[in-house]
Image (cartoon, rainbow, N blue to C red; front, top):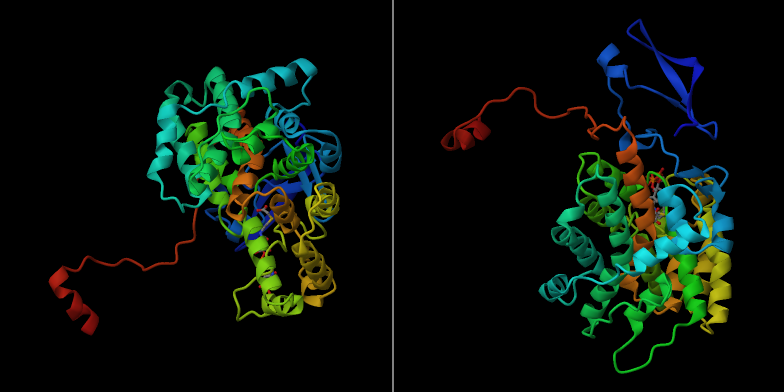
Length: 440
Ligand code: CMC
């Protein structure tokens, strides 16, 4: 944030012969934006930007993304370096607190998280109230919202100690909440967290252990899970992160803001795409592997079908996360001795789409969700838990943005404007005269 500067050049806007000047702000990676904060006050004009495709809502120092060159960096560190060398908790610390932790900082962070993984017994009873076939994203969002009722000592967004404690609680409890939603859905007993296991091993144990048998953590599963969570950990102002920021801008507490982010992530155009991709690959497989048919369908404007896992609002060259995951797929599947026909279908789909003028012209490339589902399947994570996995990965990013926004003294409540396109002045018609009015 501190590295942004206002340039001497100005942007000029001329409307009806009147001229207005606006400062140009340059970010630390030379990205330029026109600061229109004074636009309405000076000109009575506002801007219209469908889907915020050209609008920065904040200045942020967390994640840098260059969609043309396929660059993604957390706090300046390339995603490729983090994927190769780090683990999910270390990356979480980096995103939330701004620097790679020293050994002391890391161990303290890990210890605190480990000590907060249990859920209150009263909270666990909530799971009995959900239908067995509830989507785990609905359960996740609801329980995260519900935990705020148990931690009323941690709801003040302006109290540093309370915020720090809520961060630890959320990081610690989200995997437990997620695993319990799965256990409830299959009618198995819930497995309490194990404090001598690392973050990912503990999660896998809570998901897959049963009380009647010893559970052995498979190191290859842990490695793959760390990689997936790191790649999902932040992606600057995406739909769910913007939701978290918008909710938080009203000074709502961290639990309420994150619960909103989880619900935003659920949609198939966002985090729900990983589930949609695997369902699409299954459908292609069950239809005899006819990849061309599905590519044609996705190009047909009269058909709402889209090639799931393809395209991105920001990446117009390649998604570096998809590149890492494509390479990881072969390695992970080989290491854990799984062969998945869906991987061959995915590769053939990618190759054909990348050579198709429709996808080339529209700059549509595989995104992070194209290959993630294949690895999650290999780890035996059920399909409807994929988006929950994305949420566990994205949690530190959401927290980092919420914290950055709250710590920025200049933050204002988010409140976009609109161009009104409804009726002009109209009048109330008593109920007994309304049909007459229509007839007239
Ligand atoms: N298959 C076929 N056509 C597509 C696709 C696709 N997957 N994605 C975009 N297009 C077309 C779209 O029809 C439009 O064509 P036209 O200009 O002729 O109207 C053009 O490409 C631009 O698409 P858009 O919807 O205006 O682009 P957007 O930036 O608003 O949407 C997107 C980005 C990711 C929502 C979209 O590409 C999409 O729906 N992809 C499939 C869902 C998906 O994989 N989502 C995961 C995103 S990555 C994980 C995350 O961060 O959440």
